[in-house]
Image (cartoon, rainbow over all chains, first blue to last red; front, side, top):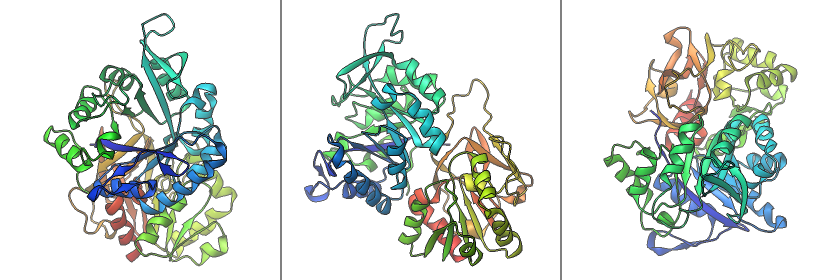
Length: 259
Length: 203
């Protein structure tokens, strides 16, 4: 049986972690490669890098980060943020990433999903979705709307419709982020996660709201998620990945316990 | 020295990175003369079955690969799509495979009620079906990273060396004499992947 995946997410700006990550002896790590190595050794099943570099001339720094990560860790990792076209995807993949995640760019130009899947295979293309709860309407029948530009711009697109559409276009996985839950550390948006996961055939990674191991247990069972993204709860050393996995194991939720 | 075949399908760099980590020399090449001197070959690959076979045919690689695998009998390891190419055919496309192992590649078939996801993506266990030098010293909890929508089915159980469950048991590693295939990505499977590649390097 497939194990549920625990995936730390690292935000990178111009080649550096945006938040210091505290590890053993409270060492503050600013290098995304070192942080990735720490999580790899702690038992992360995958790693997500999100490039929040604003200026395009500094984007090449990320390619160098990807290359160094690929030489250092031997688990899959994905890169998102600032991917606008197939050429951007190609550079990241050739530098050593398994997957690329597209978010706003896919809303602006959905064909980027199909083009990416055709060029590199569906397994390379992750659709990142930022979702906000809204009133149910004719336009948004699921009550969940896609927002872009870091949650600032409403698109008028229904989240459930978009998830299915992305699957049909060839996305291999969905990373589903609840803007409402994001940063609260009060738990994932379980209704949203279950709604999307039950209505697509491709795997769904839940994102936004993780603060305690219990939250992961909820989203991996009730929420029907295939994987759970975590950030603050491990970055600030509140928990280690091993502790989270042990908690899940006690709850009969199977993860990769040996590596 | 392991020769990794570059036919434009997949991330050959990741395999080199792991081989470097375990101290095994490797080169990536599409050059027929270089391949002719290969003592050990890895056939990687992600993407579409037909695109891969078309590239192998068009680039003139098929003849030299057939010679190395079937006449010289050098050890060959197909990874992911590279494993599926070793079979006779795939439901993903129309092209014939390399046909070095009596097996075929088929789509995952689940009942309508099933909530199993495709692609089969993530970490899963492997179970030994036939002992092999490739899977020497495996532990009961040996787990690898998978990502695929089609899987291999051998014609005779003797060609199956590992099985994995996703809805049902499928052949996650196969062998016919000097030719091996693994559906998972050892290069992305941490310590267990290193062990498998070490075993291959020692053959």
